[in-house]
Length: 466
Ligand code: PHE
Image (cartoon, rainbow, N blue to C red; front, side, top):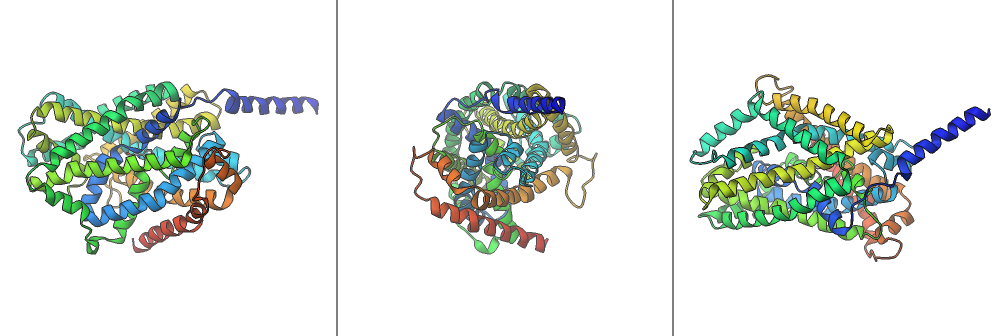
């Protein structure tokens, strides 16, 4: 009787100490929080994915719908994820277990971890491409080719069985090292240097693009909504893209908020992050579309847009090697701070839920993601054939961004809007009265009705049509 009791008590204490008492690593303060979260949000989603999706879905109308999605659904959900992580102080699965013990809500966490893992599968590959382009730019190889030649260069590189994989591996090793170093000394440090630099550089490039002949045609393409071009799939893509870009719907923001210290004005930080992320996407569009139209190209180039189009733009500038190297370096770094956050979601889950050391957890995640990334990369060449019309790479992107993230968004809005005690929520948002959050009632209404209903309508409409 007594022995099993002692043993149980010991197991309980052990679990409690490993999960709660080893004082959790945190960000150092507000600036660190904003920059690290912006580091997660701003990435390939803004500079690579947003422009090519806008280009493929008709420009202005897509961008308009995207902006509505960010403001009406994205921003409230960023706040909701922050509140969950801040309150629970645990990984994404642990957070749902802590706030809703003995319920199936933790499955939403599991869905998030899976989405994070799938996104990493293709995200690491593209991060590798950016590194290759940086390397080519530094050597002066991105000069004096025609746009057709740049296209051939890109297509043959991504289809190569070895070259992209070398870069993918290097990126996984680098992210591995940052994650081992934890929050303050790893993630926060990296973001504080990289993010401000990226922002300034993007502005300079946008101004340059806007000064090109015929640039206004690109601006018109971005801001003149032609709603007749928009399809229901375009709406779902815009929604998925808004979630992807804000790192929403998979617990990334829950995980980061679990490292926030006290006295943080969550609504304000959520707004700043959503705003900066959207600005970067729009500015990326202003870098790319004026140039596309100025050089008489098509905006629906797809995944190659940034890699095929931009070298032509840099050539027109003084010091092209300098500008193109800097751009691809920063693109790589933006991708890097995002893929760090994806890795952190899965690593914190593995480490906390299975009581493994951070080191062990990081290794397991890095190893597993390597396998997935190899499959994703090879699927762009001849070695792995498309499955039901899409490559493994495209499936990973589609299942995670277009299906799992919106579903995760619905789940979080229902969880925070209906399940979570409203006093707890208000206390977190106002930090026990330290700040005033005037829109609480409207906010709850959005979480309860607007967000889940809108997301589900878009989602089901598509599933039904597909
Ligand atoms: N938000 C990142 C980007 O735009 C991608 C990302 C998605 C990162 C989900 C973390 C979680 O590139």
